[in-house]
Structure formats: structure tokens, C-alpha cells
Length: 197
Image (cartoon, rainbow, N blue to C red; front, top):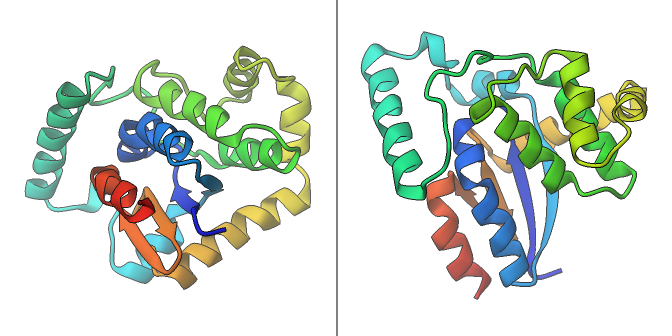
């Protein structure tokens, strides 16, 4: 499909959170389709020379904080600059999103709930009870989704997503792939919109 967008992302990424609603709206406005691919960031960093936040130079950390404030204010989105549960092991949350998508559910909406949980609601994505509650708030059976997320094919899909990201040259999130083009960052959504025509 000409307007098929693959989005590579992490559920604890503030930049993914900041761009998520606009991305979903863009997909709707352009009558595009989205393929949601949560990925593991450690292999991405290892392959591309990136560093986890805590290991980045102080000046880069300081500038990141300035940019988060600017984008939070510019977009008028609730965002806690230093949330209680960040960084967090998002593995199970990502597996739930993948499992939900594999079942034909709205992975974009569940991803938004997970992103909002970290950056607006200060909830712990590593806590199973919290994850079940987030799913329930989306009208889903949280316990059933946790069970589905534990299946090996779902873990395999998570790994396959990450390998696909590496093969596509992804080095950060969110990255949007349209055809052979990559658009890295929520601040590239206008360029993605232009490419969609």
C-alpha cells in the first residue's frame, strides 16, 4: 500500500509520547495505514553508537530537558519531566501491545495509554497489576492480555520488530518508515505528512 507507514517506537520514549496523538491523527487524515512495531532500544543503541540517557554527556542531558519543556508547552500536553517510573523495563507492556495487535486490536490506542501512563500519570509499566489496569481502562481484559503476551510467538515478534528496525537503519524512536524513507522523531511529522501528499 502506497500510504503504509511502519512506526518503530518504545513505550517509555517521551518523544514518542509527544508525537503519538498527532501521528494517529495524521494516519486518519491521510487515510494511511499504520503498522505498529514496538522495539527493544538496547540493540538499537548498541548498533548505532547511541547511549542510554544516564550515560549521555551532561550537556546533552541538559538540552534534552530544555527540549522536553519546549515541546510540552508548544503542544500543550501534560508531561512530567522526571517521571517516577523512568527508565522502566517496558518489556511486558510492549508484549501486551504486540499481542493486542496480533488479536486484531487497536495497538495504536493501547500504545497511547501506555505512553500516557509513563509521562502523564507516573505509573509503573514494569508492574503487572498496573498493566492489567491500563488495559482494563481501554475496555480490555487485562489478565487475558497478560497471558497472551507471555506466549513465545509474541516474544519472537518483539525480537523480529527489533531486527527489522536494525535492518531498516533505525537509530532512535519514534521512527516512521514510508516506502524506503525514514523520518526520525516527532518533529518530522510535518515532513511525513508532506511525503504522504
